[in-house]
Structure formats: C-alpha cells, structure tokens
Image (cartoon, helix red, strand yellow):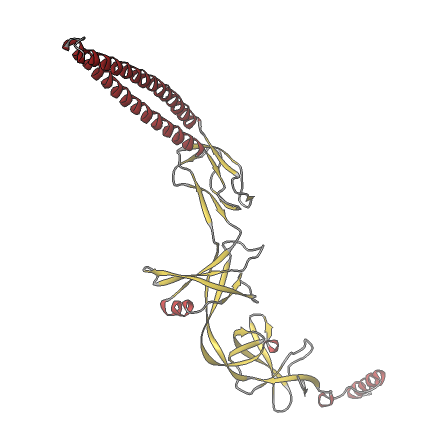
Length: 382
C-alpha cells in the first residue's frame, strides 16, 4: 500500500469513529447578541485635577517650654478624646516657680491685713482727734480754753488725718502688691500646666515626632492630631479652570489611584488666593463622611464645564485587555472584530470614545467572554 493510501485510510477511519465530519466554518450557527450604534450626544465638558485628602481640622501639638520629655502616652494611629494626656514634660522648675509665687502671694496677703489694721487705727485716731477738737473749740467759744489749746487740738486733728491718708495709701499699695502676687501665682500655675500636653479635641494621632529623653522647645512639633469628623480634598487649578470651579457648587471626587475609580459627589467650599510661585489656585472640596477616610490619600476631582459634542457608547461595550480598551465592532457581513479605542470620561452608563470609532458604527452592547473575533452574529433587540 502506498503511503498516500495509508494517510487516506487513517483519515476515513478517524471520521468514522467521530460519527460525522465537522461542519465547515460557514455552517456554524451565528451567535445572538445585542448591538448598538455609537452616537453623538451633548455632554458637559469636564476637567480633572489631582490632590491630597486632608482633615478639616489639624492640630500640631507643640511645647511652650524648653524642657526634657518625660513620657509620651500615645503612638501614631491612636484615637484620643478631648483632654486626654499626650505628653509629660519635666516640670520641677515650673513647680518651684509656682511655690515661690504662692509664698509671695501669702506675704502680700499678710501685708494687706496689716495695712487694713493701720487704716482702722488711723480712722480711730482721726475720730478721737475730731471729737477733742470739737470740745476744745466749744470751750474756746465760751472763753474756757486758750487759743493755744485750740491750736494744739487743730494740729492733732490734722496729724491724725495725715496718718489716715498715709495708712490708706499703704493699704492701696499692699492690695496692688497682693493682686500682682495673685497674678504671678496664676501665671506660674499656667506655666506649670504647660508641662503636660493634652488633646484639644477628639481625633487620631497621625504623627509622633518625639520620644522620652528628647528636649522639647517652643515651636517644635511633637505630635500631629487630626479631627476624624470630616475631610477635604485640596487640588491646584490654573486661573482659567479655577474660574470654572468657583462657579459650580458640586463636583465629583475619586479617591485612590485605581484603574476603576468610583466617583462620589463633593462640594466646592473654597477657592484660595493665587499662589505667585506656581500661578495656581488651591481649591478645597468637602468630602462625604466615611469611616475609612484617611489623610494623605491621593484623590482626583472632576469639574464640569460648557456643553460639547461627544461620541459615546454603552460602558458595557468596552472590553479591557491589559492596558488597552477594545470593542467588538460589527462588519457589514455580520461578523465581529476587536477594534481598539481610546476611551474618554464615563458619564453614568455611557463611555466617551475619543478615537477608534465613527458615528453610527455598530458595536456589541455587552459582549460575553465566549465571543471571539471573526464570529458571525445575529443581531437582537437590546
């Protein structure tokens, strides 16, 4: 038997074992799919800008004293309540200063009491001198007292009045000294209180920049405390775009650097002043409250501008293959082929096509994973 006959016999045997010969490609039934046409619609023009999420309220915890750090009671990530103890500084000097101020204040109070006694004694002397002067004057009017006795009584009254004025002046000085000493006590107590740093509001510690043994100095940031009650996104826009951002009350925000961003509604709350160095404006957007929100996360803000013409298809028609985007375009012969496109922004369930399709081009609305390039299709109503 010739080799060609052997090959032919094996082919016939294989076909017989399979039961029937395979159908030619033209006999494969078409796949029913829904198709749509790319269409031009009016869409608001949009522009995006990246920025960083920050807490609405942030406190830099710093010392007002130059003092060693005794202990740090918190770590980064700890949640604290208002008034919670955060850092303890060395406070022996401030305590000694408070005790000295209290001792001076006690001495000043004794001085005030002594001055009060002197005033009362002087008032009694004036009263006695006045009564004596009145009696001597009465006797002098009846010629029972000499002019010298009247002069002596008048001089005694004047001297007692002068002593009273001096005592009252000393009393006022003692009271002023006591008030100054009391203020010194309050100042020393306030300075002593600076040796313990507490949380000014409820929040979370985001940075710890100090350890026990370090020396705290005025102005040096030791901790950073952020209020978890609200966050905002800060983005920079040039002058032309900042004008558009200031005229809208709402925008969309996407957080995190992901291939499939989820957009949430946000509100423009502030357009800052022009930064002369970068020639840009800092725009602030309030973000919706979320338990997982964290400062430092990258975010993108999308703003709306004037209306424009855009070619769109259903977002479900797009097929991602790695970093590229395709659609299954339908040919006039009823077959599909993978057509690369350049996707634009997504608005609801519509995806803008920047390049790769023309108006009225037919594409598969929602291609299944089993659909392959070159397959024949049967169009159905969507």
